Length: 171
Ligand SMILES: [Zn+2]
Image (cartoon, rainbow, N blue to C red; front, side, top):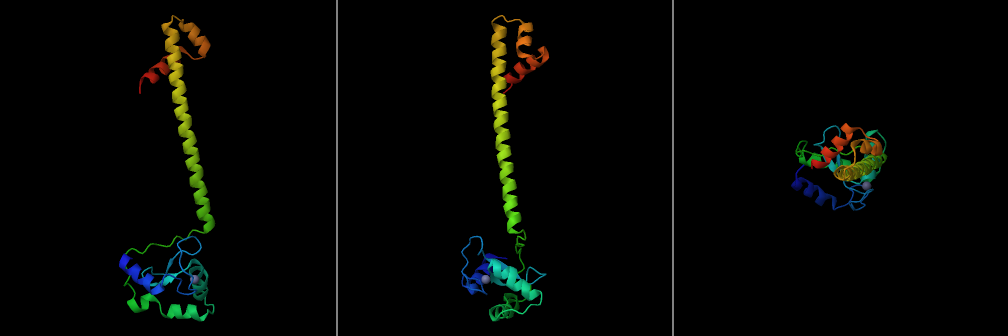
């Protein structure tokens, strides 16, 4: 859907749900929904609030009797006057995830961020400590410490000690 098409829809709606007339405020609970006639997303009927889009129109589609405003809205569907396919370009598919699913997805993402931060900090800490250990080994070595004492004190093998020192030298 193009910006021009959306602007025209918005103007028609007067910035409020076309059934219940509650103004769209952009916040959760009364966000603007682009209502379409299934199954074609191009067949845009108008702009509705979440509640009307979810319940009122869905009830109609299940064959329930609806109130006059909903009936008038459907009779005056945008696509009827503009023709099916008038709005053809890239209509966003509605996010059909439930509120609970969205909250869960947010929590999952938040947990992932926290774990990543903690992991990154742990790696930075480990690298810092490894540099400190390498420096201490080099110092002990320079001050004439015997390899066997360094091995005994650290509990690491000669090979491991050599690797710690070598890795600390590579940036
Ligand atoms: Zn509404």
